Length: 265
Image (cartoon, rainbow, N blue to C red):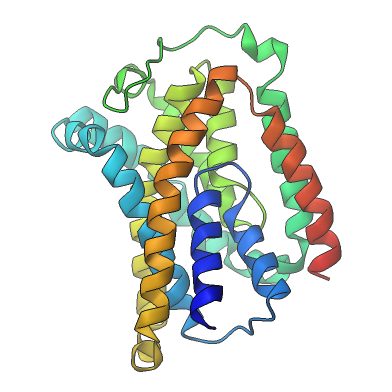
């Protein structure tokens, strides 16, 4: 992998990590198109790009993070939302390998879910709270019911499967439960912080023996690109949610699914 390829992959990671379009599918397709062969140190490159998006969301939502860390109830809600990931990680691990070439089918499922969440039926759903434009308010999370948070956590666990959009599934389920679009997105982005940290820690343990072979200049490019584009993607997504729909993303995912079904075979 050269610096240009690292820059492109970092940009793709930053944009697709938070938009509901499945970052893993986009990265896999991009690597296939650029002829990048999988190797052991690529795991660390992907991890470092994930850290770029992690820093992006921390930069924009640091007030929310600080508020959560000071509230035992909010901390408990996030722990509850993360709980389904533990059994799902071990349950879905063999399925991720078995269905690695079937990401397109799961992406179609994500698009259907987002389209359903954008339907008129859920547009009439009672909202949990009124959402604002600032990044520093968390009324939806504070008012959230325990079982609703658990359902969102279950939705996130299915993103361990190839092609399932983490943000798309969590935001869609939250909307179906009555959350406003922006508050659903805010909770999804905050939930990504411990998710990325936990996943990165596990992958680091598995691939620690490749540290000596990592080209750090290439990784630095990927980190910077994912950080900058990730911040832009979060702001863009909040702005797009003013329309109160995920349908454009649903149609886009359907198109990418077709490409994936052809390109990943």
